Length: 257
Image (cartoon, rainbow, N blue to C red):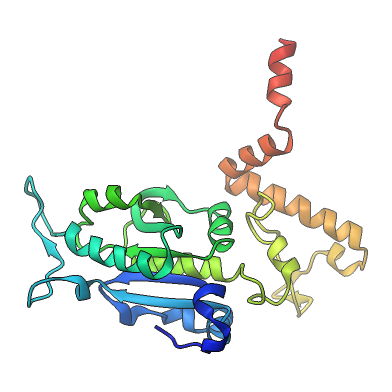
């Protein structure tokens, strides 16, 4: 845990990420640098790590056991995890969501990040080995979240990514709120391409419209580029964008037919 000025009562005012992990030394890691690190030191958010082994009851601090039904690997024990989760909720409050980082979870998206950042924080459970006993997830109503269709060695890298995505949305973390509004996914589209000096590089020119000084034309060009990039690279996002833009278009066509 990183200490804060008690006079600010950060326990109640700062967005807090509580991480249950077997490797607390992995934190803050990248979160200690750049905007997230500066915001952490300034008290805009808090990071609390809890070592799962501290909740083991035997002298070897055992946290896993062989799976019922056979199979490779080990599974994290429900009794140990229950003690850790209960301690985290006692410290933070039962209303904060418990998130288990898992490749079988629902895909994390910007809308989910915005919802998390708008709350008081989150409790993040980082699994290892073959996973965790299903019963503890059911008992605590864990929300399983995935970064994508791939497998990591453990939940810690995923937790760091999720925390970073939330922290940058907190007030005072990113300098320009306008830059957040124009990012990928904020408007349901991927972001437009960016250019800077030199104006010509390796025979490649900056698009002329960006040099025109005509703000309306620049905005229109950027919108067009965002739509084209989304349509070509993420047809799933493009379909959702069109449906959101004209939600009753399909219904109108069905009525007419």
